[in-house]
Length: 132
Image (cartoon, rainbow, N blue to C red; front, side):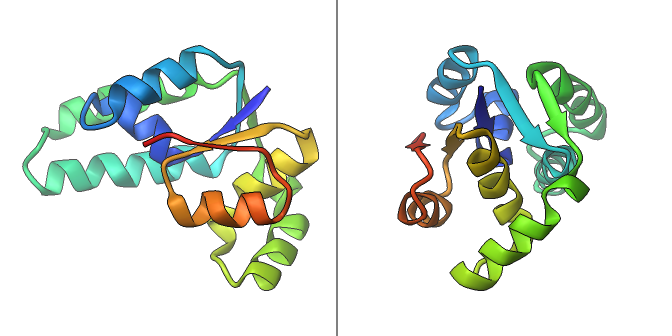
């Protein structure tokens, strides 16, 4: 099992810069993610709508595809204690640290396009694949 974050999922769904690598990575792993990935994905798609890069109907369609890509969606409440401890230690937002908490709990590789998150993960001993 590998933990995927919203930066990779959105790239794979939208098929934009970096999407080929994101799609390849996603297709090569069984995936888990904290449930916040759906909220973050929805917000990223909304930003595409606001920027005029897609219409709302397309954003809604892509959002319906998001949970189908992920094999296991974990309730964030199960990860919060660990996530806030990581956030306090790393001085990084809790919502990102949910992915780190899950990767640590599952002893799974974390796939992300977020360089800062990848750096924090690696410094904590979490196997990480930075998908550029």
